[in-house]
Length: 121
Image (cartoon, rainbow, N blue to C red; front, side):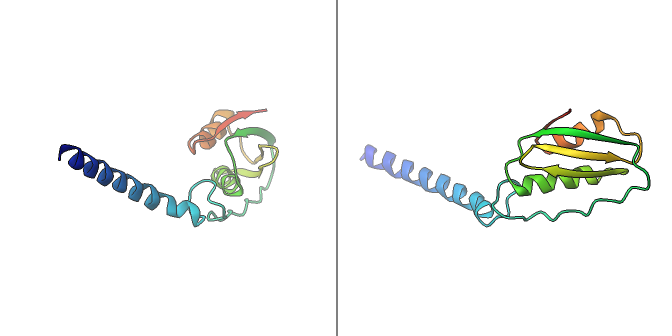
């Protein structure tokens, strides 16, 4: 009798775990996940045209796995005032044109805040 109750409890726990695993995976399979969702759920922000480019920096970005990751990093960088960025997924780089003086740390912090690793080349 006791082994039957134990088996029932284990089966219930497994069903609950399986339910939550499937529920949390559905957005990923629909291409709506934050990363590697299979589609471009993130829309690219058009880079700003800078009146004057005072510097160009190249960042190495580690952790991007799909086009959605590329767009997220590019949008984050382009969201910084005075930045025009283009990200290359294959080369794992971000080419950043600066219209004002921006520190390397500010650019790196923006990328790292999204869960990627970055360093200025």
